[in-house]
Length: 32
Image (cartoon, rainbow, N blue to C red; front, side, top):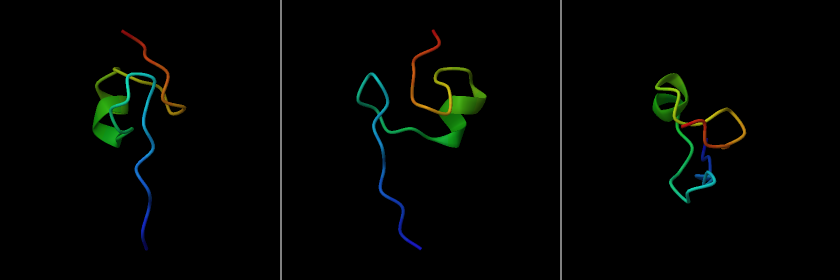
């Protein structure tokens, strides 16, 4: 399975690590 990396608002790829840290939500919107 190949999944393309989708950039968040700040152009850094969305990752589960960033979501868990509270940096972004599941849609890629910045939370901090």
